[in-house]
Image 1 (cartoon, rainbow, N blue to C red):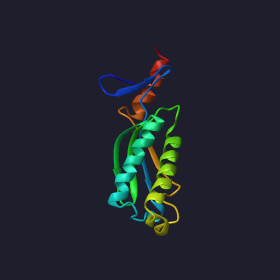
Image 2: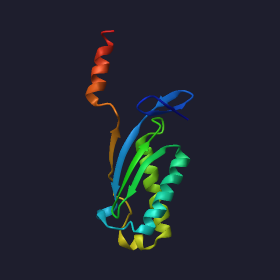
Image 3: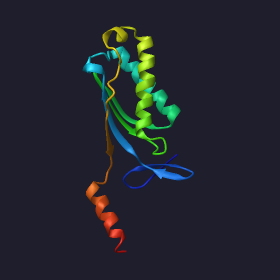
Image 4: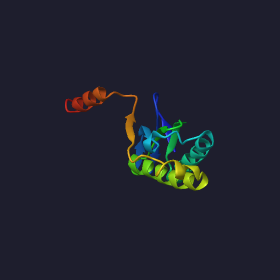
Length: 137
């Protein structure tokens, strides 16, 4: 379920209110241009299915020939690392079965590395000042 204030939406469960957005990027092994248009369409479907199963939101998604960009909103109880590991593992398994040319093109579909950055409407400096100011109240 979602609630909103003036600047952003929050998700909530019976015991948690959260807004945790992440920009995530990962690449194909050796940055090979393996993600053809057909593979890209199927990968988007797989990511959407994983998001439904794991209950996280895909806010934006762009798939290039050799890498993936996602903007996700993830429940901190589940965790971003687990979400990305699941997406990469499930998608690699399915795509390599459905598109056999991927097996001959590269030994594994994805590199082991990934880029994950938090995204927010408040800067780190603003949060630091807010926390420091709490003592003086």
